[in-house]
Image (cartoon, rainbow, N blue to C red):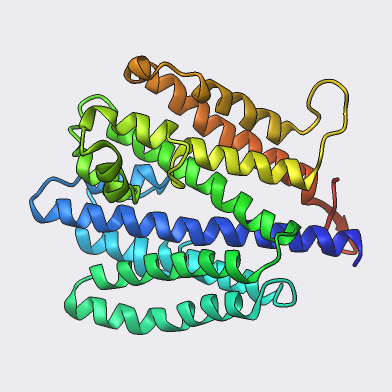
Length: 308
């Protein structure tokens, strides 16, 4: 393969991982928000802000569900993410396993039927389907793909998306004047049952679990460590001093900050930590793009060249 083709494939796989993880995260957040709306506790404008959407200051439940779940023309919706992941996978079918491709293809083709059912019975079944299919996708990728660079780019994309979404959720949950429900926060992060088994529901340890736990796969610490490991394997650094990989250096610095953070001071350190996490996601994403997915104009079209 040419370096241009390898770069295009790497970028495609990276964004497949991000899109599938994003669809899962939005489904979790939207499901929890709908439960809150039933008792008049949800502020839809806050949910829009969490996901980076611009829109009406007081959107209705119907508007929220339509825009964040069903609208395939909105890149930041569930359907838009599944559509983008499926289109990307279609271009790299020779790289991903047939099971991985079929998972995304079936998921996309089933979404209209799931939407019809959701319009009659409520959106929770639709959201549950998306979460289950995202879990199936990543499970199939782990079970049927070689642990080569293609798999690493999928996992890298998933890990950075997971850190970014969790930082957004914690930022909104802990902003001044917001009376967030800890249980709903854990459910939105997919952490409720694991947290309950680990800490017996001790609400004082929620931040510790979501930020620092090394064994929970959806924690910030675990996601950062996974992203750092993927980058180390993609571009081993043989320099005798320093770190030439900007993305890996940025991720490593914030991971080390969390590694040695004082659990007793997490509440006081939280605003600074969340700002650092959101910043590192931007820095790492830009550095990964510059290193692996550089774009150059050629013959009126845009092509990618490997930056390794």
